Image (cartoon, rainbow, N blue to C red; front, side, top):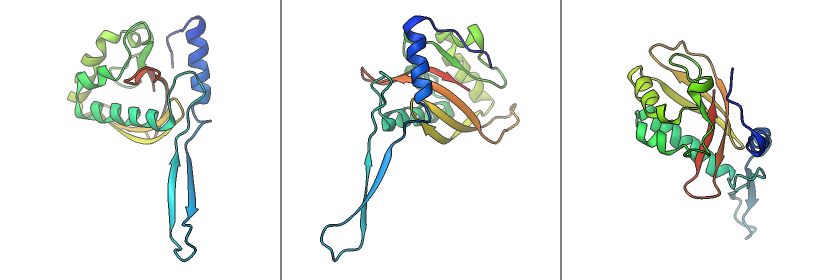
Length: 172
């Protein structure tokens, strides 16, 4: 799988984020009620702030991934486009398979909408299996012209320091 090259600090930040993917995860904590007579438990979710300089939380990244998948599956090219940062923060949106976006093509931010529309015509759909850190993910992918594989692993990076949060890298 070829990927675009990052230079200087951007490469270090991307490497740190990709390393964090799969290492940092949210925490679930179950605690019994305090009255002693009630045997039910309450579950709380602790948001984990990622220590990669992105300003993202695990919950925020998971919501961003779900939003991208929902927009892609609906063929909403404008919504997919808006989930990616503008240049110069945007680095690449790479996809394998038919009509793949690789190398220099993946770096062309201006072609995201056309790619989504083209893939929607082939009934390309993604199903989220798992998301970790910033951003490691596993999806199932199906399309008329794509022979399904069990699970596809991908990586990316989001930035959340300034709202709204956006992807700068997405790659399968």
